[in-house]
Image 1 (cartoon, helix red, strand yellow):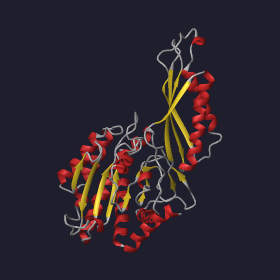
Image 2: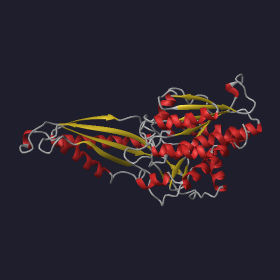
Image 3: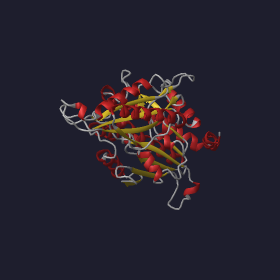
Image 4: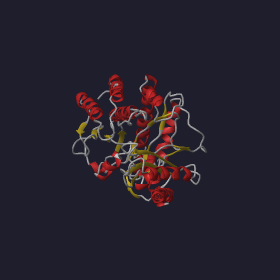
Length: 396
């Protein structure tokens, strides 16, 4: 394994990003992305590749650096993991830049194993391909199946309009699906029925009014997923899907309770019934490890990236990396790409995610992640400080 490993594969990494971008796949359907990344490693002969790892479109690549062998004691060998994501959004493709997240994980993996091989340090380096981040909770399912066991740290990064790490705040999220049931009638004799769509509309309006009560760190946003079959039939069924977010589970709970009351009030006003159920898994908020975060910021500043002031707190969306950060020291920073301040989850951001300039930014972030892991792995004091800060987060 030579020091030019990463340089030799830069074109393939660019091609991987393009392939994923041009073939957007929804949660747990990412077969093109899964195959493209795993085939890259198999053909390059790098690491031990496990396709369909615990989930159909998840994967694992593992590499033992330095002078390690199969007989190396796993419990005494440090283990670092990088994450790749590669699912897309309905209708707007990679408007969250997951094509870039995918190759950041691959590039960081390559950069770290090269550096560790050169200095002869024995470390287990893992790349985990996690499907279904956009609502499916791929990392949560991988965690439940044991994929995080034995990890000492976990790192990944996300493209955004701004570069941020320790001052970014992600939110807990819970998704509720409210299904309203009424009674059919002819559109010209609506008094003979119970209009489930009216109930859903009132519930939607109730939640809009609820926003006056919400703290700016909270949010609720939803869509109608069913509003009836034809205008001349009073709908007997209508449905809303809402996402509720807050910085912590403690703060999220009263928001959820108020949201459920909004659903019930809409149904009661029309004489309908409502069924409220959780849709998919809930995400916890990310706890950025202060040691990893501090080093990552230093590495990215050295590459010319600017971070907001220490006192500025920036709210992001939600990610299943939050659940990872609660079982292993982790960071989930954001790196800026040239997108003219376009919002993630928008077509302009999707366009920006496929540019050559954005790919360069992704490679910079990969370097920042790899150098962060390398510095902690080489410095026993930093390694212990990382572990201590993680333990203290949950002891306090």
